Length: 630
Image (cartoon, rainbow, N blue to C red; front, side):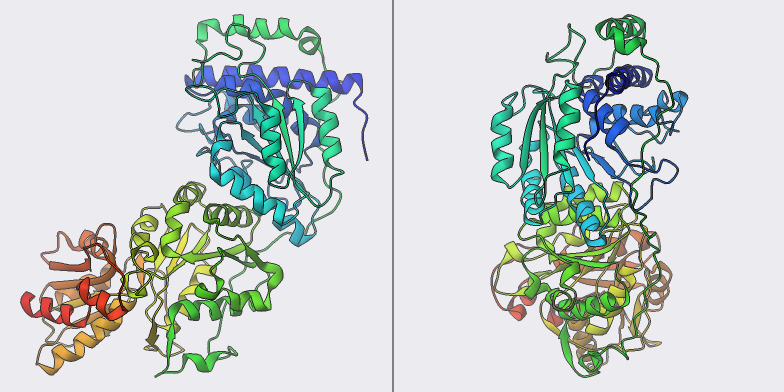
């Protein structure tokens, strides 16, 4: 139902916009860094959204039915902090502590400030996160809206258009994008500058309902957002023509002021200029303290409970009997199905490879919780982030190699401390004839470096199943499961227990001459090597390093010292950043000698066995290096 924009309401919103500009300038001047001119272009838009349309429980930012606001153009965050100040969430003192070491108000949004929806700032990512939040609202039948503010510079990023297509595909009429089209980037004009109609046509082509408005005309902003609420079955974008540094004539729409705060000695003069520009707004005093409305619909709070699986009771239990073979990627698919039965919070996202990653097993049973992202890995990770931020437990799966395309999204999710669950299949040269473009050989390295991340690497069906369960219950950061294409024999009993930061000592004696540490396909090769070495009177210990991060440092040290202080690591991954270097780092001062077998040459097409031999990580290569070593 449309509301009337009274004269008093209009003056109120203009007053708030003026104060947003003043506070953004004050905060960035106090911090001696920041982007005040970008804040000034967005102030009228932020004022209208935050002080009229945003429905929000200020005492509970985690209320499941709060409207969501994501600032994709993260450098303009001071204007959003100023809005939260205007709503009474933070004090003026806290605002002026912007960007200080002891402040939660960081230079770009992070989760340290609990009213920030997502970590943004690396441009082009906010819209996909918003898609995830909007999908969640649809799934839960909640009536909250998701607002995403983008800059016109960042819409040059391909990830934005990936997200647009998926938003239109899923008919997200609860998603409202706002493009603050202020024409100027950091070093020059944006791609289309103020050609707002051209930008509108692009969004229309991707399936959006579009509005082109004057982003400094609050009456027009107000009326447009009211119209947006009437749109059904498609997402909306408001392209707002604005000016960087709006209302200060000497800097408005001029290059050279991006990321440059004003000097302290000029502050009073600048504030006076702003008040003189908007005299009625400056003199306006609201009759009462503004409080945002709440969505009338009450949402049930999502509780995160531990999910427990029992492989013995699983309907697919017989697949995991000793002596059988199954690819870890397929075992992962069965584990997903079991998780889906135990928790309605489990979602699965696919990048058009569901019949290779076996996420199709989940889709067949829980189609309403399966999100097809097509070949758009960046958006797949972004949408996963949005779902995580709404307390869902999403698993995003594709080939391990293709996560490299979404690495910036993964990095930002790490900054946000988001519990992404990523599953990379087809890892290493063992995938065979598809060739090096499909081989995940960098994936351990790129996930290991993310703070609070864990990296799990199963070798058989049982461990893959159990490690997937562990991922579902890990909420402190990103978890990554590395699965293999070839089938491998079941080596663990169904009752075997696994833990994050653990390993399994599979072979050990009192006369071991070396310790072989491996995981995945190379563990199977190591067990073959163990048998061949044993037949020739050479005893070695063998460790399954299923938790690559964190490592079981204590066990590795103990077994290695009992194995004549010698270690051979074997991995289907490049040396740099991989399992071998992880082991090296913990024993470097322990007087333990170590040799690393890994993929050290550019691979090519071939059979699994040919490629393992070519990379010198097969059984015979392990036997040879152990004999040379001892």
